[in-house]
Image 1 (spheres, rainbow, N blue to C red):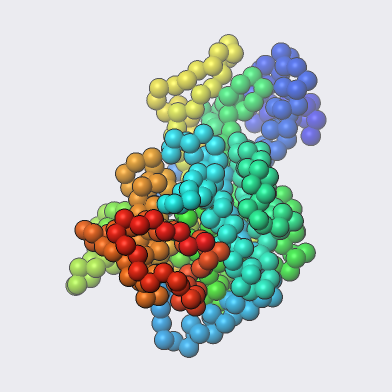
Image 2 (tube, helix red, strand yellow; image 1 turned 60 degrees about the horizontal axis):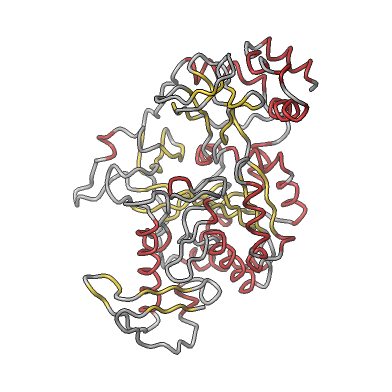
Length: 468
C-alpha cells in the first residue's frame, strides 16, 4: 500500500493521528513509519479497539471445568515402549525440528541484551543459546540425522541474536540448519483506542505474544521451509528454561501415535495458587486457564488425600504438527486465538511532539498465547514431566525463578543423574555439597549417562566438576 492509500485507510478507521508528523520526517523516518504501517492489518484495528481496548473483555470461563487426565511420567503400558521407538524413528527419519521462542530481553535479569545470551550454567557459565545448541547437537548425533532449528526473535533482539550466534560460530551448529525469523508486532493503544507513537517516525510497538509465533512461521517462510525439508513435528520450547529437554522421543512418540495435533507437557503445581496456567477440560475441550482466571475455590480444591484436583501446571513445552500450523494459518484463515489485554506504562509522543514517560498505566497492549491453540487441535494430549527434571526458568534477578535457583536446580539434577549411575554425591543440609555441570554433549539425560564408563566414582565435598 502506498502512503496515500494508508492515509485514507487510517482516516477511515479513525487513526490518522499516527501521521501527524509525516511532513517533518526525513526519507529514512518516512520509510520506517511506512513499513510499520504496511506490516499492520489495519482492517482489524477497529474491532480490536472496540473489543479489547475501549471495553475490557469479560473472561468467558467454561460452564463445566474438570481436571485433565495427563499421561504419567513413567508407565509399563506397552504404548510407552512403542512411543519411544516411534519418537526415535521420527528423529532418524528427519521428521522433527526444534522451535525456540527467543524474543525476550534480559532486562528483568539485569542483562542488557537478548535473554538467550544470559550465562546460566553453574561452572562454565554457558549462555542459554549454547545449552540448547549442545542438546540439539547431541540428539542429532544420537539419531544420525541433524535437527533443523527455527528461532523466533523479536524486533528489538533479532540483530543482536544473529550477531551473537555469528560471534560464537553458532556453537558448532551447522548454520544451514538454523533459521531466524521475527515475531509479529502490535501497536500499543491509548485508553481512548488511539494507536500511540513512540517517536515521530515510529509506532509504539510490542511483540504480539508467543501465540503470534504460528502466524510468524507462515509469514517468514519457515513453514514452507519445513515442508520442503519433510518435517512433520515441531518441538516447541521457550528461551528461559535451561532444564528443558529440547528433544524428548517418548513425548514426540506419544504425540504422533495418538494422532495429536498439539501436545503439551505439565508438572505438578508447587501450590494451589502458583502462577502457571492450568490444564483443564472446559466444556469437553482441553485448554489452559490462566492462574488469574481459574476460580480460587477450584484452584484450592483437593482430593481426600489433600492433593490438588487441578494440579496440571502449564510450562510452555509443546509438540505441534506442521500440518496443524499450516491449517491454522492458511491463506484467508484468521488465526482464531483470543487476544489477551494488559494495561501498561508506555512512553509516547504527544501531539506537540514531546516524549511523555507516564508514571501509571496509560496504554493497552494486546498479545496472543500459543496455548490458546490447544482447543483448536485434534486429539490434543498432556504428558507429565517432573519439575526437578525439566523446569527451572530464569525470569527474575532474585528470589524464585532466578539465576540462583536455576543453577541450584541444574546442580541437583546433575547430582541425581550421577547418583543413578553409581557415583557418590556428598550432601550437606539435603543439598549436594559440590558444584556439578554435565554438558549435553557428554550426556543428554540420565539414561544416556548410564551408558558412560565414568572415571569418577566419588565426588568429594566442595568439589567443582565438569563433565564435558
